[in-house]
Length: 438
Image (cartoon, helix red, strand yellow):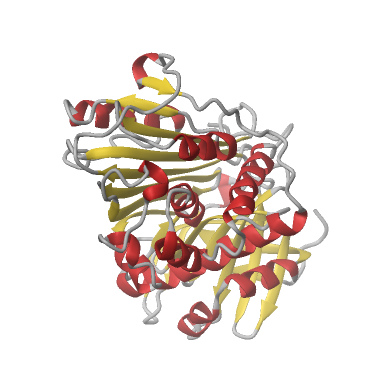
């Protein structure tokens, strides 16, 4: 890899599993073959590639997703000490597709927790419009590997062959999420179905996520798997020269320090300062995606972290001013894997996790109960001189140049960061670094 190239790869995968008994009516619709990834049952409807979505609806969706992002961040940080990293966009989209089949009080409760403020007939088209907008990013920009910038968003759903999925549900996902139903026989050979899905995931993420579904996660009761993949591959706008990288101290919350690989660059960055913190925004090539770092002052990490929510981060991003500064920060790698069922229940989403309150009759017409047994999230991020490489997966398991400016920012103490789409404000990933050596 050339040192003049700054690289980033961001991936997010979303999976949902609907488990029930091995019976049901035949699913309607044609069944073209898709080779190694199963027979595809396409809705008669095609994706709407030009959705008529008012700007206010898109703004409402992004605002709600951002609120949910920090609701989840605060829930997760309470139960997971140390570094963390996750993709709220992945979780939101997975549960949005699942919400498409929710009904009654269950649907209302899910919408409240997910901060879905639009009615269903406007929310799903808004998700479609946002996906199409994000997919258009990076025209002419560079990727990590000498190829072009990529921000790829892909959906697929996997269902038990012969099961009674409602045509209206398949239409909803086809029109708004471009998701065709791929038929597998979970009842006869659940592990074969698991391997097919894992192979698809690996291909969509260019080999970055392997063996996502562990043995035993897909069983003979599996009825539906919803998958969403986000793949981001971009070069930093400004590369950190490797000759500037040294081992240096990073101050921990308790005042002690660890020695970590540290990189530095003098360049123009978005910068803001507030009560108890500084913020720096690092743009990726093309100026459309960026990483926003919130660096609390020494001794004020908990205060600043607790104050962060969707509105605060949006206001912070809007207050950035371009300044020449020297930025010093560590290289880091973080891996996170956890169930977020407890966090979702803590936010008030309880009905979806148990019958009889779980109402997903919009998926199967009520031929049998369906409910969510768990929501598993796994994420990985690597940050160095070349950029960012990140992967995330969610499984919703259902049963059933000038002279240097004096300004300097040393991100050498704990900080919070987000990776966001600048024009829409969409937050793709959220994380924090307490100890880059951990």
